[in-house]
Image (cartoon, rainbow over all chains, first blue to last red; front, side):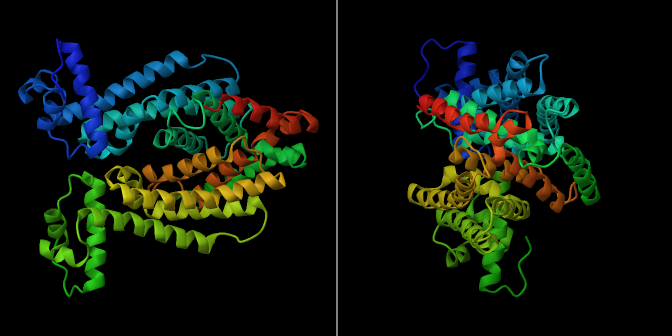
Length: 226
Length: 226
């Protein structure tokens, strides 16, 4: 709230970003006024326009900035080669660590998609699709090598991302589990989900039966597609 | 928007509920005014007070009503006995069907927890915990019978609920998959996740090793607990 001593361009920009995240996470985008935002940062409302043209552009910059950071960090973390299991493990560890550290941005990226104007929404949806595609490629790779058995890799992609991103809604750093324990537990669950139908082996069924189940199930599912 | 012809108490109450859901889902609770709500229903603002005392009570009624309906429907759907796999299958099919039919309520129940006053929030959190406990009981049952292998049933509960509730954020009835196909695909993924570490068998490891892995892993996780 207090005016920032010795504020300069980049520092003010970061202060505006943080104040905006807090206000939107607390009240929602529609309820946040630029007057509130300026007061929270400790600058004149008019000064905000040195950083963005209007409130919509501010929201878009927040969400797009988060998505750009996320993509850059993921690209640096991902294994360029290796088994699908190793690649999926790395993806999961990355996603958990990145998201628990930025729960507020993640919440806004989900809850305020409704507030983006159509062109901005389309741009963000395309960036999310691209992120989903990076996980989908790993799952497709695993299905091709036989490491994974999934009835529908697109559904599995969305299921895994929802499961992992959901951590943001309840995780507290001071809670029962460390970040490392969370990464291990969630990696175990994601791998079990992806290995999927090889499970039949563990129940004493023959390998021939296992090989048949996926295609049978796939036909049944395709028949049910609306 | 138009005034409801022949409106009576219960019909007006339902119209207010629907209008409120729509306004909160679109703009957020903080940005919705009771004047807007009354206009949307086509009644005088003062008439709203026949149905609730203030805006906070209205939000609480919406969320509590959703949770009460959810619990009643779940209790009617759940298998009172049977294998853990059968019980988990029933739970998953129920949760998917109920949530795709009520995506707006689910979105509000997650995104507007922030807007509940402390006592109301505590009541809703207790109802959610109770819902989570019903799934947790099934997972504990499966771990006890050996059907499931999970490093942490509490984390598995939250993971499964996030995975299934996430469907609400993207499912469209006119999309590629029918509700029944969605139920089958998601049940397959949830069961694979829950069966979890029996997977080692499918990779050619011996039964003795499988029996050892969970307790070893559990010790490692406990050491990492914060």
